[in-house]
Amino acid sequence: MSSIPGPNSHPAVVITQVRSPLSTLYYPNLTPKAGEIRIRVEWTASSPLELHQADGGLLIQPPHIIGSSAAGTVMEVGPSSSPTNSNSSNNRFEVGDKVFGYSFKTTPERCGQVYITAASHQYGKVPAGMSLAAVATVPANLVTVFRAAHADLGLDLPWPKPKGWEPAQKDDPILIWGAAGSVGMYAIQVFRHWGYENLIAVASSKHHEVLRGMGAKVAYDYNEHGVVGRVSEYASRTNGKSDGPKVPYIFDCIGSLEGTLRPLAEIAEKGTKAAILLPVIVKDATATDVPEYELDVTKTLPGKWAEGVELNGVRAHFWEETSGLKDRFMGEIMPTLLEEGIVQANKQRIVEGETMLERAQTALDLLREKAPSGERLVWRVADDEWL
Ligand SMILES: NC(=O)c1ccc[n+]([C@@H]2O[C@H](COP(=O)([O-])OP(=O)(O)OC[C@H]3O[C@@H](n4cnc5c(N)ncnc54)[C@H](OP(=O)(O)O)[C@@H]3O)[C@@H](O)[C@H]2O)c1
Image 1 (cartoon, protein in one colour):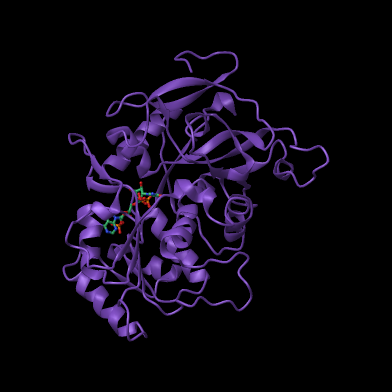
Image 2: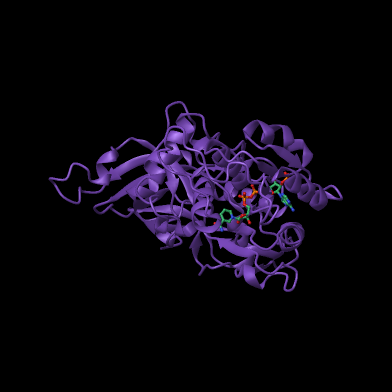
């Protein structure tokens, strides 16, 4: 990489130093190998993960390109792995296809840059009529829901969903705390589609109508005193099983030590499975404070969780290891859920700015101010000269 443009390079938005403004560096354009495509990234969605990385240095080694969800245009397709194999995954794509997906593994693959060269199974075709800004909100957080359901909650989401299929936990209370967050909204829509009917959403009151429309059975406001008691009372009343915990499944879609884990520790009982989005935020990033994070959920709130509560930290980055997802999620499941209207993309808040760097920095500042509420920050990546 270089701080000056070269003939065969492109700009990327980079964390060069923790708790410093973002910068631009230039990276080489990588020719796709077999099983890869090169994409011009046109839109991305900012995730709180970028704030954890920029302000807390979470799991990064600067310089680090930001971003994980991308939407853009296929510029180059790698050679088929076998000239006789017409099922080679690269054959799904042609130059000019509009695609969206999730690239996160190594610095050259991340999305806050004009070109990504990535494995083609990490991308799917954009459904007709959908904007790149809208679909950029989807990949990272929709796959998070599938990863959490399969690996951390043990709730089945069979694909394709067999006709007439119903989950064994159809009426079990499933608590989705932080339901107005980007992950939370996808969780409600996905679980409802697969027939989990007793979904308890916790979010600010202003989002309750939308969340009920997406499939939440009830909604409670975490800002109101007594929310823990109300959730517990509702779950006790509607859980048809005489033994076991009143809330058998908890999906913490925020992962804040004081904001979500502490109230959840009052609700969880022996036998509750809790999936908590990592990192656990021990102390928020602010303009003056260094954030603190915990990556081991079992170390949180010692002595506060009831014995026998199963605590699992969700790591979407491992989605490819989840049975059945690697080959089908980005290319088939995700576009189909959008196409069929089963999942609506998050509401978008477009972050403006003269340059890619300015837009990225403004989005990061908005995340630090906790500005997004029921919406996802999206911004145009490639500046006009690249389009
Ligand atoms: N480990 C993983 O695999 C993984 C994957 C995705 C995300 N994450 C992490 O998960 C967190 C959430 O990500 P996101 O993209 O969904 O965030 P987001 O959409 O930016 O979250 C914003 C929402 O958080 C809600 N919120 C804040 N504090 C809350 C509380 N105490 N109780 C309930 N709701 C609260 C707000 O709800 P109201 O508007 O109702 O106030 C707001 O709408 C981030 O820390 C992110 O890094 C982890």
